[in-house]
Length: 185
Image (cartoon, rainbow, N blue to C red; front, side, top):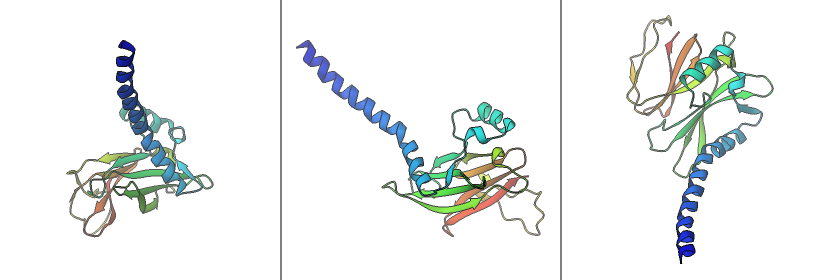
């Protein structure tokens, strides 16, 4: 009788452990699916960062993947992805934003190279910007008319060029596209 009770208790415990294990692997398999959409690219690795950028990431973002933001960008209640992908051939790095639906199908809505002549992939990292945050263009950009500050309705994506600049990308609901604001220089 005691052996039967033990087996009955082990079944739910085993089931909970299996479900938890599947949940942990979910983001990895999603990243694998995303990478399959971009042959010839890989997720920008921590080992590809400069020593200064790695030290900052280890100190300030120890639990985060600095090449992935997984959050709801368009406000539909479903988590989306922003990833830094590096070309296996040229070494150029791009930011890709994918919006995902309830059935976990993701569609690329933004794809832009983020490395420039003055920045290297080794300086880049991503961070989420919480909904409700106000972002405004830096005064360092010389322009005749500055856009009004924008209050984010959903999570934004901060692309940091370590020590050089910060750009926030966010979903513009009215125009149904990703917009960018350089917030630091």
